[in-house]
Image 1 (cartoon, rainbow, N blue to C red):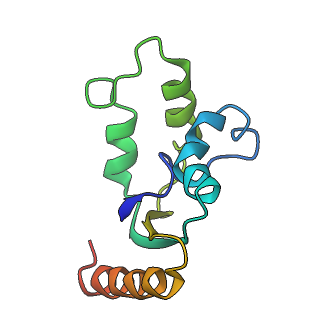
Image 2 (cartoon, rainbow, N blue to C red):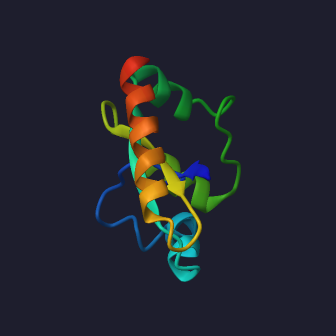
Length: 111
């Protein structure tokens, strides 16, 4: 399965305590004992940052978690965007194989 690695890119050290609910993306598969790995597929661009700070594109409204997510990522230009590969228990080799396929595809189609 291909899924998000985390809903945000790198955030400052003070942010993980504010964004604990976001850990479900990786924690769920740890609890289910499923092999999983993270593969970078792209990088944050200046346009991504501008769109993130545009309330018409990324509306946070009164949602404090969304505001923390946006504020925590506001200086992430150039940082990797990753996907998570997850397989069924005891299928570690398949997980690594799919990770390699994703990595190869991402390197052939840079954005």
